Length: 144
Image (cartoon, rainbow, N blue to C red; front, side, top):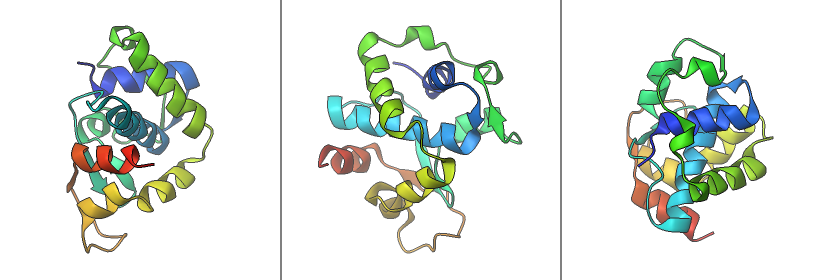
C-alpha cells in the first residue's frame, strides 16, 4: 500500500511548489475519492479534523514550520510505487481541485460531513485532533 508521503510527492511532482495547506487538502481528497471509487484507502495514515481542515499528522511533521513545499522537501516516500490506477485517481483529484486556492479548499472541507462529524459540536476555531474516519469519507464521497 502507498503512503501519504508517496501521494504527497506525486502531487508535488505533478503540480510543483504549493502551500502546505493546499498539499494537505489535495492528499485528503486523493484519499477520500480513492475510498469512494475503490472502497479501499489509498494509504494507511489518517487525517485529523484540525481547525484549518483535514491534516495528516505524519505529513505535517515533515513540513512543519514551512509555508510552502516542493517535491524535494518531502524526505520520505517515492511516488514511483503508485500504481497507474492510483495515479489516475490522484490525477482526477488534481484536475478537479488542483487549481483551487488553499483557503477555498479549507472552506470546502469545512462544509462537508466527514470533517463536521469528526469535530462534533466543536466550533470551527477550536483545536482538535479527532480522526476523520475512512468510513465517513467513503460514505460521504461515495454518495456524491
